[in-house]
Length: 459
Ligand code: B12
Ligand code: SF4
Image 1 (cartoon, protein in one colour):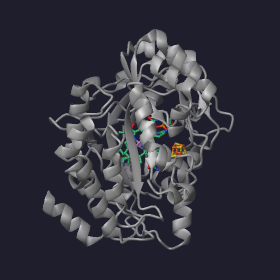
Image 2: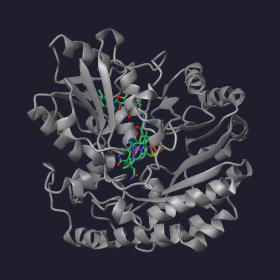
Image 3: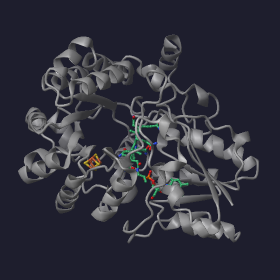
């Protein structure tokens, strides 16, 4: 059996990278799925990450193609699926978008996989090899991540990435923020790999620096403490995601620092308390953001602080105020997204019920396009103000101010800031989707002409 696994390209990374090299780390999804292919099937597995190389459908020589789909890549995935199925290739779709809205994906595939695929993917392949493929495979509620095969990172060319040392210890998040896909897609039950499996993976790859893609590494405090303590003997530096709650917990902070944590991505989301309450994230308190940054800096941990604009309490000036605050309090790398009601989330359901969804063109659901009617400003105002926030935060002056306070080694902070500056000042290029022109079967409403024209003018 010949299997090809594809991660279709999204709007981001279309033209990514400074120095003509992809500035991203190796995705973990394809290596994880490749490792789950049962050995006794004697299958050959080819992986294509469209973030680094385009798929040419004519070149795919496979009996079965599996594609991983997030909302922004769904139109591209569906287009590839159509072309492959027309050639008689069996197509399987899985991933966050398929899990959130299976009914959207199902017409484009011979089979869909809903939820995590540790058990269903091997089952699907066995049934396919017997000529007994079912149209849908669902994750069981009692899925367990213990003793799973380690991801096979050799299936992707490691030299095309900043690092291949990407790991996960846990899945899911205990919180239920209105805009987040995680609770809707996978529920709130924390799933954890045994700490010794994580350590075995780190040792097998001989990683010196590691990136953890877990949504919230501190979701289960006891597990987090065990994991951090187990990392100490490895002597690695690592980067991951957590919530601001980490800064309130001295024991956790001690373990974090000792374990080699050198950077955390925090979803700060908003400087408007009423927004945080309305999206069920009021454990974030804007008045304590400065203290959180100082606490982590004191432990030599740098912070990527992520904000989202366009929540219902936001007015036109919020983007500028947020960007100024991010620079003032010394967030090492501030990031700004436009609120995105991913289908399948409570936010999508609410805005849909209120008649505020402006487009169901999934390609625009990339966190940098306005796809709904904001409550207190126009879509164009929100779009422009978000761009301005990025440009302010990555102006030379703002970079210089933040570099003075950074917790990262100066050369690392300088290079990452330069990368983000390039991104911040070229957003329209990074998020242009010209490959999908006229190809999207889900183009519900035409993209707003003004924005398209602006993007074309900048190209
Ligand atoms: C790491 C990560 C990234 C990395 C790398 C992305 C990559 N290609 O791997 C970076 C930073 C580059 C990134 C970028 C973005 N990301 Co991202 N990312 C993640 C994150 C944190 C982890 C993904 C991961 O590696 N998980 C580990 C693997 C093993 O799990 P998995 O992918 O879910 O796969 C399992 C199952 O889903 C299933 N499965 C998945 N695909 C398939 C396919 C088949 C055939 C089968 C059988 C099974 C299957 O089997 C796997 C094993 O169980 C997730 C959050 C999350 N926890 O999922 C967000 C997430 C996927 N990202 C998201 C978003 C929105 C983005 C961006 C648009 C953000 C932005 N504006 O920049 C961009 C888009 C990039 C693009 N393609 O254009 C959203 C997607 C939401 C949605 N509905 O679309 C998520 C869910 C985060 C969130 N909470 O909102 N991302
Ligand atoms: S804390 Fe973060 S990962 Fe958890 S539900 Fe909220 S936004 Fe999602």
